[in-house]
Image (tube, rainbow, N blue to C red; front, side):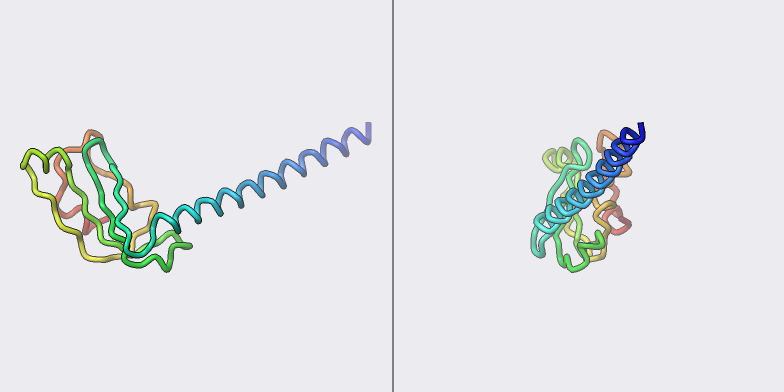
Length: 122
């Protein structure tokens, strides 16, 4: 009976260590992917809503380990641009942005008109 308790406790300790190691490995993979994606001079593009596209021009990635980059952004509605309803705006002024906030969209879930001040207020 005593050996059974030790075995269970040892198993739980091993699972906890493996979980901790898995977390470290996943964090290393996440950092490697960020380093590869957000390199200086790269323009990263992603759709943040069905017809809303955000282009990010990476200026500086020296604080990437903290999750912050210096970039210029350009958010625009692809369908409105194709139908000449709204012109594609230029890139905003360079500023520091957290990567977690970079791809958030606060407009309608279906897209819609992009406010002109959205790139300044991110």
